[in-house]
Image (tube, rainbow, N blue to C red; front, side, top):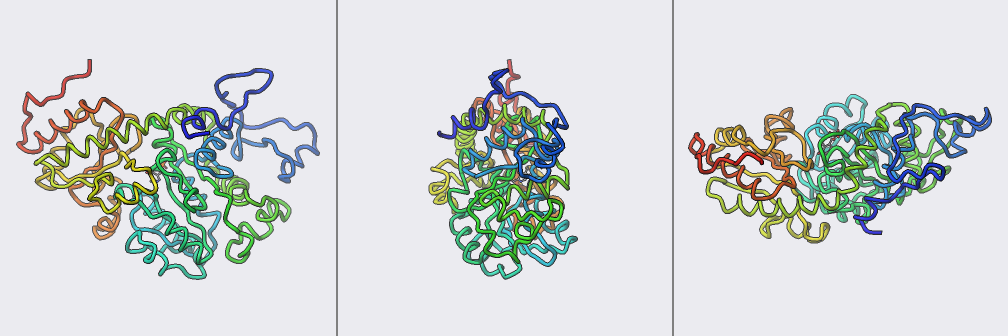
Length: 438
Ligand SMILES: *Cc1c(COP(=O)(O)O)cnc(C)c1O
């Protein structure tokens, strides 16, 4: 099946007695056992079934199968937020003294997790000076547990060369972990290009309506964990909490995602609520259609901003002059993301006036909502970084980040136009003021 169809149908089969066409919300914490032996088999991971909703839930399981199918993975685990997904994905690989090698262009909170939280657990993070595979390769050593990148960096908009990064990671015997939030599986499926693990903030395009936090880890099922037992202890050493079960031998291709669920999520507890899984499924159903419109609107907005004298620069990977244009063709079938950044002429003061004058486009730190959103990364999402880290992450002081929504593009352009006018002369031109909807 193709993406559009998978998004609507994958992972759900109605209960025969009820035959609910929509996925039901299983608002329950626990599940009855037939007997003590049945419970014991479930707790030994010998029988399949549900025990407790911190570990798994039937509504969440539909979302997990659907996201796994969209990404082409062998299994997925949903969690309470994108950050929970990322933290647990790393925790499953980590051990004291290990290191993670990362590209520098990252979402702000991810940067904080990597540079301030992991080191407290004696896990170090080595940031390469660019997303180039050679720069990454130079930092990998015997203690490296994974290479990490965002397929499309937030907000830098850089497109990573997934095949090259997977190749260099695999040559050193480590997996490639990819945050695919900004691209979404509609535009890019990293596992097809060699990535081993994909994480998502479901909060963004997959949920798509800015109502619900959620995250997912997807296991590509290809990485040979068993070949390096010392390097990946969580997967190769007996898990004392399951009577000495060894994930790599017991589960084979799904070893990693089973360890994420039964060890990491079970003990760290950042479970997704079943109601949230249901709400996210409503979003997933239309993700392909929405992303198509997001992409088309973003192209028209980028072109309009590029033509506008009141704008100094536009960073959009869909321009043939962008260094990422060839990667957009190769990995995303020519469809650049709807996240773009630009600088208003007049620097930071003009940028602030522009931002304050927006009427339709919302001033929020979110992306991937059906509505158009704008943020000023230097003062919000990337505020904790030093100026030099900001530059490496692709954040400049005047930069405005737009997540172009699925409104009629004329209305988006009209709002940008009136805000640019306000930024320029400090007062609103009545002729440019956006008509109130309706
Ligand atoms: C938003 C975001 C996250 C974090 O997701 P939450 O659901 O807000 O926790 C992680 N990575 C990227 C690229 C994001 O845009």
